[in-house]
Structures are given as structure tokens and as C-alpha cells.
Image (cartoon, rainbow, N blue to C red; front, side, top):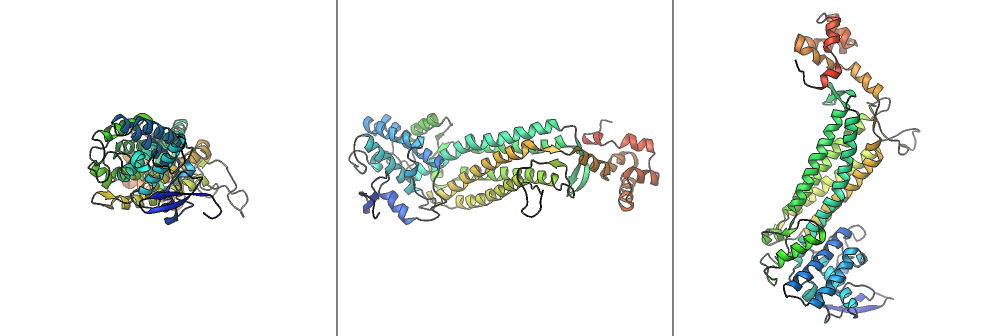
Length: 469
């Protein structure tokens, strides 16, 4: 603090010097000094700070209604919390993810900021706990052990619903439009990275759309699973020092403030000691990442080339692809999206392990669970938006290349199987391949079909749907 004006704050361990311009207090300052771990990379962001503000306001108003807090204190705490919700004091939340596993210090950070700002609103100076006390007033009826799980759920639900779902839905709609636009473009299918029977480009893209639809259903299901809030459980789930109606009432006020269907968790012991709903949310994000990995890889395979690869899709020419090879264009948006998918897989592994570490009445890996889930949501939303804007919307088929691949495919022979049997059809395909003949020429050479029958039976467009006869 050398060279800066300070004030003295107190907590149970004694006095602490705090920057006089800051709203945080002694416990925040201790944590800030003691946990310099990833300080430039792992600070809480807007969703978490907002969630703290929502909880502190709702708790104050609930305590007022229940007669646990005076109307004057409740109203000024609510005003200060409103400013936190609005983002006015984000710089007053300096703590990192890697701190106490209960999130106690971040909860106290919120208590101290709200208390000191409320004191200012009352005309006092920060640190004047006789006016508003961070523990006795702002943290009334709460414990860090039930506040931080509630923060986890509120921040995650808002990010899932308001950030991730719109981004994925937009990409889904882009691809759905492409599926309809290219429903008549017949292309060769591929299994095992080898030629297979035909389908349409629209059908292939419809598979991607279906994956995103299912992933979106999973995200929405996970969001609903996060509706239960631990508030009212206090330290170990018994509700000690909280009014019996506090949990239900504060959850209702949070639901009203956020527009989300939050409720009081039916079992507070599970809500404090296990975070299965967060683990489920992370697993759903991993599933979405897997779907995006598949879609991005399909697109970059189809766009490979342009001369020596498949070259069936044209991707937008966003930037030069090489510092040495002029004119090279790379599938960079697909690469970025797949790298995000890999990161999400890693985050999910961390969440799964952390979620398994509840001991007795508390899981003390809460901050790292929240951080990884929120990072996955943010990365996925940003990568999906980028991929949609800079790649998916500009996808176009190279119809001449696609037609050439269809014409040269040996797997069109599958259309002959119902007429001449599998063995003869296989002989035609292998003869064509080994002697570098067209499929038609091989069939006629072997005498298994007539020219008229071959032309009548082998129609790629008729192979993209079930036979009706």
C-alpha cells in the first residue's frame, strides 16, 4: 500500500490495511494477498458478480419481509446490490478462482462491497460497521456454503439461456436453411472415410441440424436441473440462523428478479455437498462440443483441396492461409471451433473430478466447477457465433466436383444388388476398380446387365431414399 492512502478494516483475525478508495474490506484484502494464483486469468467475471448482487438484494428484501432485517437497512442494501447487479462495481471484485473451495472469500467480497456501498449511500464512510455490517446484515440468514452454490446456479442458468442457446440456435437455423437450399444436390456418401451410396447434400446437413437440435434440448434440460437453489440451508443444510421460510421466499424473489424459474432446493444437504446439476450441465456442454466437432470436421473434409482433396464445399475466403504458400485458404473457423471443443472436453474432465469430491456436508471444489462451466459456455457461444458468421453462412457446394465424384463412384453398384445379387454386383465394382473402368463399362463387359437395364436401375437420385417397389 506504499504511497497510497489506506483505511483500516477489521475482521475476526484483526486489523488489515485496505486501499482507501476500495469498497472491499478485510476478508477480501486477505484473500487478495494470500491467493495470487492465476491472478491475470482467473478472476470472476460479470455473470458471477451479477449473481452475487441478485442474491444479496433478494436476501435483504426477504429478511425484511420476514422481520429479520429493518426496512431501512434492507432498502439501502438493496440499492447497493442493484448497483452491483448493474455492473457499477465490477472492479471491486478482485478475487481469483483458486481460493477457498467453498467460495467463502468471494461471498465476503460481495458482503463487504455491498455493505460499504450501502454505508456510503447512508452518508457514512466505508468500514463503519455500526451502520451496515457485512456479516450481520448483508449476510443475514446466509452462509457462504449456500450462497456460492446459488451463485453457481444463477450465473450458469443465465449464461446457458441468454448466451449459449441463442448462439447455437442461430447456427442451427443457418444450417437448416442450407439443408433446404441444397436438398436436391446429390452427392456421394462416405463411411469409414470410403465411398458409400449417394445422399443429398441437404440430407447430410440435416444430420448436423438434428445434432444441434438434440444438443439444444440437452442444454435446456440442464438449465432446468439448475433451478433449485441452496439458499436457506446455511452452513450444513439444516438452515441454522435462517428463518424457516427464508429459502422459499428468497428463491421466489430471485426468480422474479431474473425471470428464471428458480425454486428452493428440496434437499439442502445435497445442494451443499454435491453439485450433480453442475456436473450434468458440463456433460451437456461436452456433448454439444462433440456435435460441433463432428460438424466442423465434416465441413473441412468436404472443403479439403481445393484441387487434391474432396473440394465439394467452398468455404469463405476470410484470410490468407499461409506465410509461404501464396493463395492458400485454410478452414480456420473449423479449426478454431474444434480447438474450443477440445478445451471444453478438458473443462468437463475437471468438473467431473471436482464434482466427485464432496466430503460429508460440503463440496470444496465449488469455484473451479463454476469457472470451468462458465468458461465452456463462453467459449462455445463465441466460437459458434464466429463459425456461423464467418463460415456456415458462406458455405456453397461445388456442384461440378460433387457430380464428378458421384459419376466416378463404384458404390452406385449397390443399386444393382436387388436385380443381380450381391456377389455379381461386387464383381462389377472390383473389376471397375482394378481395370480402371467406369462402373457401367465393367457391368457391360461382364455381361451381368444390359445397357438399358443399367441405365434404368442405376440412378443416383433414386438412391437417396427408400425404394417404393
